[in-house]
Amino acid sequence: MSEYSALPVPPMSIRFDQGAGTLSPEGPTLTRRMSDLEGLFRDSEAWAAAVADGDPIVYSVVSSPVPEIDRELPQSITTIQPGTTAGELWMTKGHQHPNHQGEIYLCISGHGGLLMFDGTETRWVDMTPGTIGYMPPGWAHRSINVGDEPYSFLAVYPGGAGHDYGWVLEHGMGQRVLAGADGLDFVNYVEG
Ligand SMILES: [Fe+2]
Image (cartoon, rainbow, N blue to C red; front, top):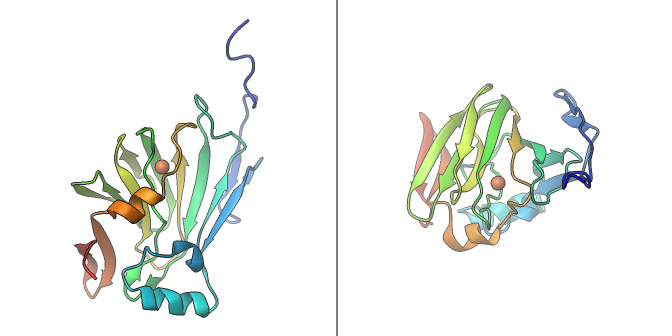
């Protein structure tokens, strides 16, 4: 008997409705509000004020039914809303893969960026529709909306990669990305 015979999901096609931001069939959906991003923005008072002022949705992640287990290849669509908090562009929490596995993001719509940090060096990949950003094993990653409309991207990642959010709280991301008068301002993460 093939060792693949016990796959929990069969071969399938998954439709993405770009307008609705939904997958069909769909798996879990994750909604991250401002309150979920505690300790991540440079200006904690501005963060707290945003939480008090309606606690807006910063981003959402819709997943396919492919499970997050070893040897599977799950996918998800993340949509980050446009906005800033004390100038810092809205972003995902960012995470490291505990088992140091690679991942790709494909920009679907909007304008974003992929910030990567390996604990020493920082890398930035500008993301526009059609761009594939590659995260090698060992590079923590955070996505940031740098435009004025929602930024959406497809993530494809090893099912056993995991999400270590605490790594970013402990190590930072090397740099922060702020909306400047003439474009993006990159500042040291530890500053402020
Ligand atoms: Fe990841």
